[in-house]
Image (cartoon, rainbow over all chains, first blue to last red; front, side, top):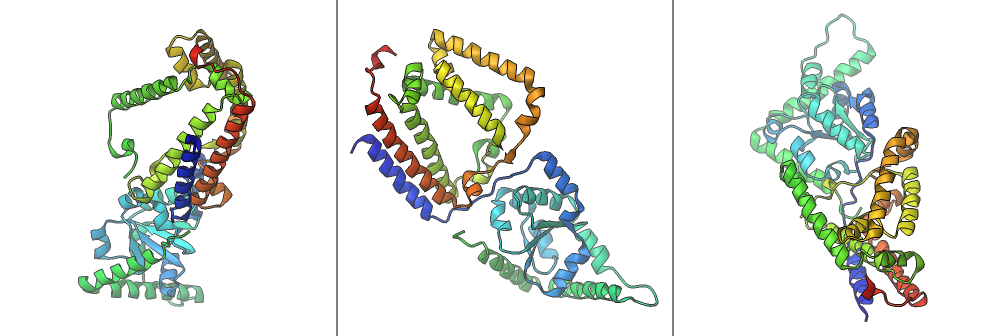
Length: 203
Length: 200
């Protein structure tokens, strides 16, 4: 065997091992700055607190809420069904492990707009176009969903559906967040496990 | 874990110093491998010496395999490694110009500087040509700006574009490289010229 054949044999063997390993097939950040700017200024990349409340209340399992706040803030309260990925972790770890979860929609939220918008910019740049930010974050969630009350004499069918969804989301939010810490932690763990399962290995 | 520059905040001068040391080492290795000889380099085009193909392809594959294994074992975060952006039209035209310059001048930019450092006269002329080209590019940039920035494909990787897994792409690339090394050696036998090692 000459050196060329030896080297080729070693490299082909290593290549074969790599072909069989479940490597994370990272997508590249793939957008021009002006295109990213145009996209993040587009209101289409956000969902309102009401839309999120409707999804939460429906018990639909095809979306994933991602809470970008710190672990302490998440433990204090969170929107039911959320998984906690603090913003710094979102940046430090491979975002693909978080976003490639098989869900049809990912909704990111933080306290306000800043971190969720940053994270959506990264996600959209990585072409996860099913990722949205909840406009106004938890501040808006509290204003719209938690503290809303109908005032008026007659309620239309549309308003009725809206307030019904808000009421159900609020009830779920209160129930889960009023659980004792031990149970809440278990609830969070179970959510994390559920999210982990979806990461998959051989994609 | 990410690339060193993303893990540690270094002052600008230290980054430049590291770049200088790495560059010096690279240049030294190029020179020692005989890459400061334009006759050895253009041998690639005439088929009598395919060292360039073998060296650069091997380097690329070793880096590819190494980085993927490091990433797999959690020692390197590949999402923090910069991927060059791809402008399709500009890359094709640029590649043709670079190839033409390579065959006419006998060097590629790095090996040209390597040859310049050991005082080769043709490398001096080559470097002057390179700087003239860079100057002309700068001066005519407004005219070609639209073309240069057109057909932008982003920082896309080939496996993404083909829709195959990274591992499979690496394997296919290695097989292709091994095939080319084999063809390269056949070409070296077919187009053999007298040994010039003593003259360079």
